[in-house]
Length: 421
Image 1 (cartoon, rainbow, N blue to C red):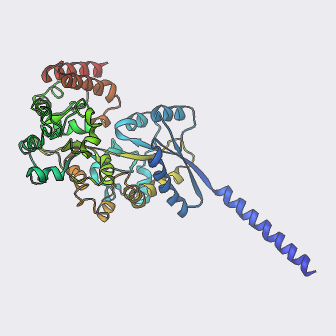
Image 2 (cartoon, rainbow, N blue to C red):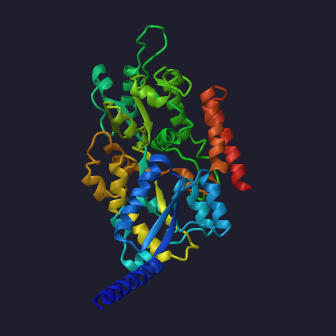
Image 3 (spheres, rainbow, N blue to C red):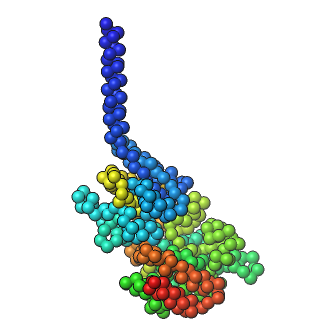
């Protein structure tokens, strides 16, 4: 009799376990999250989502990584198979996806929950996730342009570390003194700087620093901006470094294995770019620091930010919003930072990790005080209507087939025509 009772109790316990388990499984929501990151970046993103799942076992997240991200995302949205959460960058997907109605506005959720993003993120970075007064994504990281310099070469040359707000004249002097022909063959094997006009991160800050620009406020005209004396002057100043022999070009750094290897091997003393080179230089034990880009007329930089957004078509908007707040909060930014994958866009995390004072990182945060959003994030058709024509003009200048003024005058005419069509 006791045996039967034990069996009955065991069966009852098993049944209740199955019922409760089934109930939990029935209530669990699975969300799909899409990213363009692969490899190490994908694994780090999965780590962030796993932290959320530990605290929220009722929500499971499947992370998907796509090559040809833009085309794949458009296909999924237009065929009714869009992910619930997805990554979006202001200078690529943001405006086209918002205008297409793919993205859920976040303001109502923020107001309901008392969530104020201005108290969480750097203002400049947050601006990359807003359009016409509405937020459509939240930052997962930040990037701005700053100048890397080889601190050992500076010391060896007798140069002091650059002042945070150094000027163009001081910069040119440094580039000149840092340029050397070590083997005496008449060609520098250590260049002071690197110029590639096609690199928006290295070129646009100087255009803005000299008071130049690209489009009028209405974004329908380039004449008077792309071909302004200020824009022309900034490009001429950069090219004068090449003509004087103080700056390497994409062609001349090929012999060193590219810009990264050139910097690592002391063939390049300074270079302007975003924060993605930091981890490589740090891992190699390179002695370097970062500083604000030298100012022509005023301090300037450019910035961008990737973020996470919610599909306008997901049936799980509340769950997606819960995920979004977590992965773009302090935990998500801390994981991205501590793994060396990205700089945090949350001041509390940046300060906690010391990033605003560490010599290799602080300039990227200093730059945000003087930074403008990369102009690719201002216009949905930027690349085809503006970027391509600028690229062709800059290439002609670099090749020596067109003078700066002529190339930018032609680019302005072509952009005006494209914007009219």
